[in-house]
Image (cartoon, rainbow over all chains, first blue to last red; front, side, top):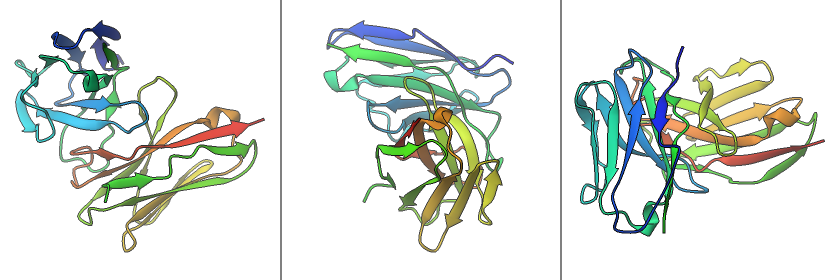
Amino acid sequence: EAGVAQSPRYKIIEKRQSVAFWCNPISGHATLYWYQQILGQGPKLLIQFQNNGVVDDSQLPKDRFSAERLKGVDSTLKIQPAKLEDSAVYLCASTLARGFMNTEAFFGQGTRLTVV
Amino acid sequence: RKEVEQDPGPFNVPEGATVAFNCTYSNSASQSFFWYRQDCRKEPKLLMSVYSSGNEDGRFTAQLNRASQYISLLIRDSKLSDSATYLCVVSPSGGGADGLTFGKGTHLIIQP
């Protein structure tokens, strides 16, 4: 079974530039998450989708971050404009559905963003 | 107070030893608990879920103490391949993966 696919793997941009990340979850997984992991810290949830609807975006810095999952399958996360503190690994994860106890979240390999 | 707190370590442990980590969480409404493992420059992967009655998977044992709001992970007969960062994860939802909150992780180094 194919896992969660993310691209690009690495990205280096200058501050104030824009960047976009792509994620394709495991086939059939209704729930998709974007996490930000800064070096030395645990992943922090940015946004959660259920199919094509947003479930939780309370920790998404909406002045510069946006995300969409228009057809309820793959998703893009955009940062515009980027700041130095956005340097992190951006992880996409998916789960089969909500409402199942102890459901496992499967993570992609992440996109490592460096803002210079 | 941070939502999920862990000792970041590193824990340097000789191969074959037993090692234990604890993690505390602040949200008393948390319903689901997990340990994830993250290798260097890799994505997190589920190690085990943590049940109220405690559970064991081979050399790994997880315990939950709701009254004190802490979770533990015990690794027996540690192997070199156990070297990794162990992330304590809680969710306020009984639905498992919703709203996962991660600790910063505990870095474990198994030495030959």
